[in-house]
Amino acid sequence: MRDEYDFSPGKRGAVAPNKGKTRITIMLDDAVIEAARTAAEHEGFGYQTVINNTLRQALLDTARQQQPDDSGLSGQFRKGITASDLKSLERKLSAAIGEIRRVLEPDVKH
Image (cartoon, rainbow, N blue to C red; front, side, top):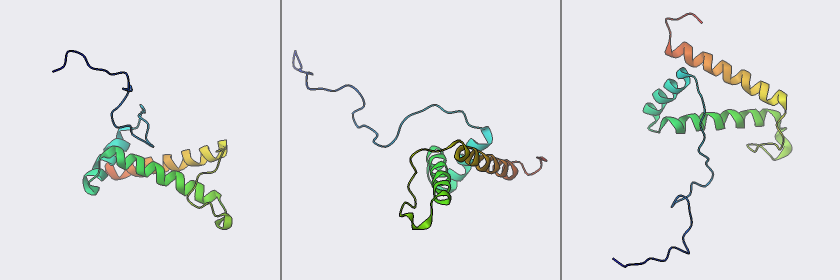
């Protein structure tokens, strides 16, 4: 080994950056995580990938419903999401969570 190495051209951070993804911490219901893990086992993906794909699809569906078909923006997000957009998405996610709980806990009355 050499006595000295020149690291001046080096850069801090990950060797291979994840482009298009950001690491975050998020709190999810246990039922959501368990449903994602169950789906991941059947689909052959990791549960975080299942959660990401589910959220992406819900957001795209919401954006498509709000865009006229002739706009040419199908599948793209609008700039500026309104409070009513977020409330609508919250209602849809709440309904999805209720359905997940119903499937995972069929003996419990909700």
